[in-house]
Length: 84
Image (cartoon, rainbow, N blue to C red; front, side, top):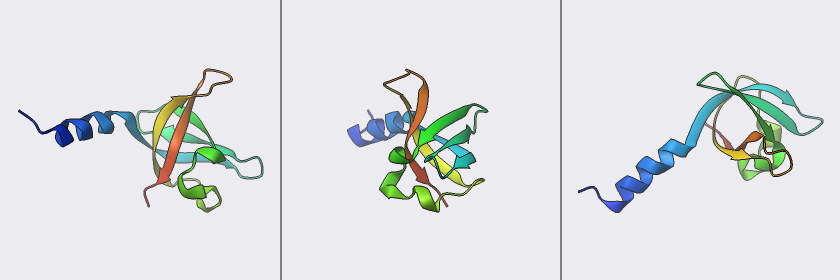
């Protein structure tokens, strides 16, 4: 039988996605991530971990969680964190 922590880690890894910053619109505070699976997903500066939006660059690798925009019900990236 697996330990509880091992199961929690396996479940957590299913929710964390990886991708590359495809486009940044710095003056408007948003951008798009090209997921490793091929899809493109929107993110807002408020969803970047540790308020590091200004340090992001196009082509940079990130991890994120997939969520829904409450206003439009579209997919969006949340908890965006640079990996480099």
